[in-house]
Length: 314
Ligand code: 13P
Image (cartoon, rainbow, N blue to C red; front, side, top):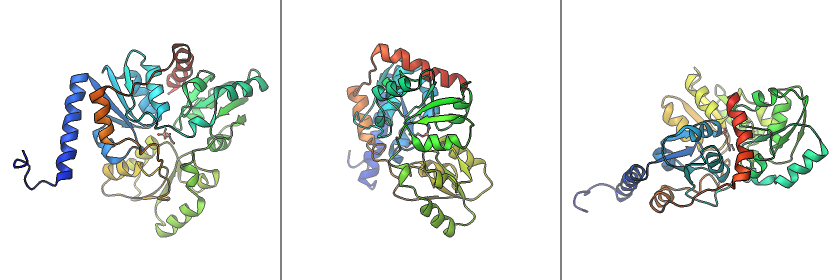
């Protein structure tokens, strides 16, 4: 066997071999691989569908395969299970969690609700299934303004991200009672990082994720989701972009736009949880059909309503 692959670097041989084995197992098990835009390049390359939180939820609700292997963090795989309960949803690394999603509990949200009776709750999809079950409507970074704007009430409870809430305050005229959560990766991006990049690349457009601090968003040409950044970069006549989000997105930005230049606002913006999943974990997951994500039925049906209400608007 070694003779057949003479001259091929061992690492490349291994990677090809794994990709082939994954493709074979996918067929055998009738599985599809969904991956978030922040995953490592090697995982992005084996995904059948790569996207932002909204796109991945839409895909999870519509795929035909029996098994979904979700390369992302737990709340994303849970959302897939809630939307497609008849499917087997696997998360290759079960402890890959979103720290922002863990900053609010259902008990804390129930307390907020009891202190603000009748006020509708909008929760970011970066929440647990049990928080979604206490939520009226979910949102993602790509539809937050539309979702909040669709509610008649002039007062809303928004959880769990205080920076997204601040962004929302600049977009809609409603009183927003917000939770104090934040994304530990996006808060590493500081205005001085953006200014420094801008001084080196004065013609570059600044694209920022709404989980960034408001003083970073104020420096942006466009505030949008990861999927929105991919669309913007493709259609913009600009040749250079400063990217204020998790650095995993730069792989696809560069792949889709080989003639354009992309600079991370800071190399510090790396989400360790999103980088937990390796191709080898995906292979093991498919081979052993592990680790299955489950959401208790009572929570699932309540959470489904808040997600579907968002999807109906999108
Ligand atoms: P997007 O919806 O923009 O992909 O963001 C997901 C996320 O978890 C950001 O931290």
